Image (cartoon, rainbow, N blue to C red; front, side):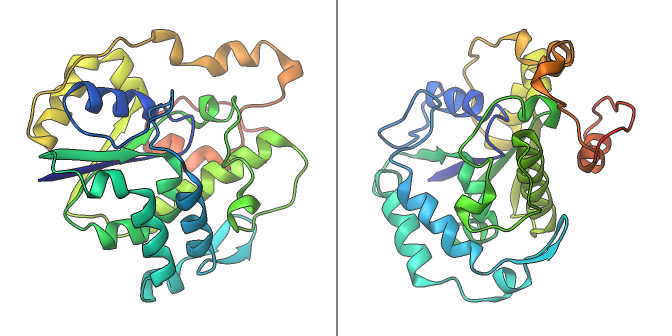
Length: 250
């Protein structure tokens, strides 16, 4: 049995990978919404809030996950997670998995519970990521503290940075791959080959939209929308090879 999950902040394009897996014969649970998320999500949301009780905010963009890393995983978290994943866990499909962006918010405990699962970390230019709204825009809703701001895009930037830092701070599971949405869209054949080598089976080729890449460029031409770049993106943008703008924001 192969268990697969996709992590990555909302609006990273994770639906493309979930769609690909489903079209390739991987059972992704049921029901699924139009974003190829396993729903209903409430038990996963509540599991994320349990995890948040073990996160300490140091102020600014500094969070300490030591208690989460070192503590025994609470029974409440496991109960919520297993209830959310029931359709996946009871399935006898040889290849199965799930996708919902909130998995990222509790990734350290997910990886401890499913150490042999295959993890696909989905990455997208954060400038594109924060253009649209997502349920994780306000981390307070999930019990995570961050700098107070009324700027919705700044909220999204903090959410993006928190999730990036959390993934970076977590020990990587045995089976781990990182994929940029931009490569999946613009170099689909090459990227599918990487994923096939990682997963060990043939993947379907779904339609992709080149216009999904670089949406921030048009957004920049509409100044009424506000900025789509914050300096807190810099470490990730440098690491993943995204074009850096001139520094002029936080």
